[in-house]
Structure formats: C-alpha cells, structure tokens
Length: 431
Image 1: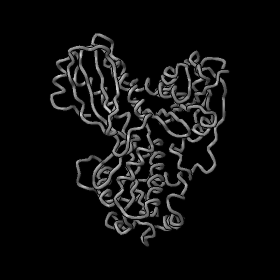
Image 2: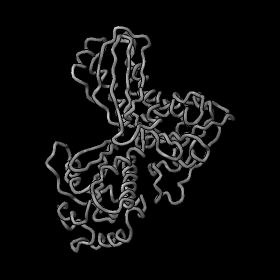
Image 3: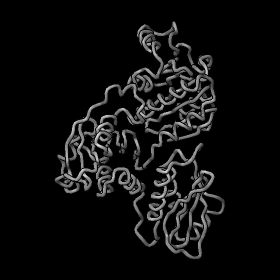
Image 4: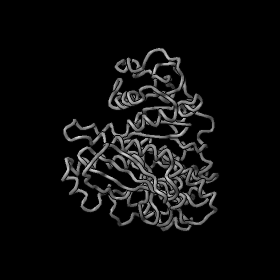
C-alpha cells in the first residue's frame, strides 16, 4: 500500500505511527486483491462525532473507504475493479473491514488489537449474513485458526466444519475446544462435523469427491470439493483447515475466503477471471481462450493450496514456442526426448487442457519448469526450462514469467501459495 504526499507527516502528528497504520491498511488491500487501491490520504479533523469506518459509493463505480479515529485522524482512499463495478458483497465486506480497522487502531491508550486476527470479524459477519446463522461464528473461526499451530502424533492437523441454519444441535462445540480427541476427529476431506445456528454439534458426516470433479470448473481447489459439495447440499457454509495450514471458507460450492500466514483474502472468482480475460492480447476464438484461462486458473488454485508451485504459460501462438525454450528437447514430440517422455507426450496430445483431468495437469505443472499451452489449449511442453528476462523481479520463476508473458499470458504460483499474473512483461495482479 502507498500513502499520498504529506500523509505520513499528518499521521506522525496524531497519536498514531505510520508503521502501525501502514500494517493495518495493507491488510485491507490484501484482503481484496482483485481491487485496485489508490494511495491512502491522511487528514486531521477538528471534531469527531463518531469514530469508526465507512464505505461510500461513487457514481463512477469507485468506492471511498474511510476510517476515522478518536484522535481526529481520518484515513481514506478510493478503490475500484480493473473493469466493471464493485460487487455488493465486496462493498459490504469493505464496510466491515473499515470498522475493524478503526477498532484495530483504536485509541493509543488501549491495548493494540492483535493484527493476526484482522479480518476474522469481517469474515464471521459475512458468513452470518450468507447463512442466517445467529451464533458466535467468530469464536468458531478462532478455534479453527488455533489448530494451524497444533499437531497430533507429530502431524499437522486438517479439520472440517459445516455451519448450518439447523436448530437441533446438542452440545456446544466451544465447550470442547480443548478436547484432544475432538481436534483429531475430522480431517475436512473425508469427514466433517455439522453445527447448528448456535454452534452446537448436530451431525457427523462423511464427504465424497463429486463425480467428474476433475473436469468441472467449480471455482474451488480440488481438496475442498468434498466439503464444498456437502455444505452446499445442506445450504451451509464449509469451514476447513488444510494440512498446509490454510484455512478456507466455502459457500455455495465455491471458495469464498482463505487465510494463510495470518492474512485473510476474498476469492472473487468472477472479478479475477474478468481481469484475466481483459489481459489476453492474443488471437484465437474468444470462447476457446476463455475456457483455457478458466481451466488453468483452476489448476493454479490446485497448485496454490497444495503448495507445490508452478508456471503456466498460454502462448499467443505455437510459433513462439521455440524462441521461448532453453532447449527444443523440452517441446512435446521432440525426437530428442526419451522413450518414456514420448509415451506421455502421445497421451497428452490427444486432448486439449480443457478435457485433461485436473489432477494430471496439476502433477505435470508442479514439475520444475513451465507447463506451456497454445491458444487452442494444446499442450506444447511441460517441465520446460524457458529463457529468463532481465528484470527487477527476484527468483528464476519470476524472471521466466516476465519473459514468457511477452509472448502470452502467464500464471505463476509460488511455493508459499501466492498466485501472480503476467502479461506484456508486467505483473498485473497478485492473489
């Protein structure tokens, strides 16, 4: 995040520090990575009626986010999508984040609000509004978050809850938060515990991966598909801890929120995919290209949540392949490839990526090097070493992404789960 000119000086003149304010404001921006935020402005008000946060609509599809503190410091910015209007759901979430930021900064005499919890209140309020749940969702989220740092028999935990609007539960989950057996009772992939409106245990259910999930474009990582399907079937909200340490919230069968490394993030798939489509500058039938982009976006989700990393390249034209590769032997069908590779090449060339099992695509994309396809979805190379660019970015994968993006669109997945998008040699979005 950035400050407008003179804003740091005004913050220093108040009871706040620019460093603490910057930390809180940056959390707002990382919560909504599909939005573009202008530099934050700081002003000093002579009179503060009611401190707190607010979000105002603007006619040109921008919204203004403002945070007013007791000492008269007002922090504000404008944000917007790359294209189109901000969704109502994003607006309401921004409203809760602004209120949470005001509480987090608070009065300098108060005990600072733990930054690692920032966003949890806004997520809890969104879950309640989506499901009609009246209970203490925030405490349930805090329980799930606490499991990130625990192990059972030297293994990290995974866990699954489904929050429902039923009212026939028995025992409150909160009264068993310290129960060691309860913490290992479910894994969130094969089983989950169902809670009623007041967070009481109502059912213990098994989960199944849906038929044809490998070919469906369901806006969720593969690992989350069983709990997503079950929670959607009972009109509930899924809350799952993945063994990698990521906490995810599933609504209507889709990934809605994730928390990794203590940071919450909204997954607005429609806005992300719209930005991807607008960033494609190559040829090819528009419908075909859209399908390829959506397909590889799902592969990126799978790689992100299994923390394996990868580089996905969609070339404007197959003619650009040889100029991009370090060695032509990395291209499918090359006579210099080993017999085993040629056998796999023959299998992959039978289908476009849209009709190849997502698990297969995730495996070949997680190899060192890039998975490269053309604008028809045909696999051109996998595990391919590509020529790097001279750029400001650090790391071989980032330099390779910059170079490849001059010949197409690139999705880079880091081993820590972050996803970055490149086109025309520039990084245009990070989620």
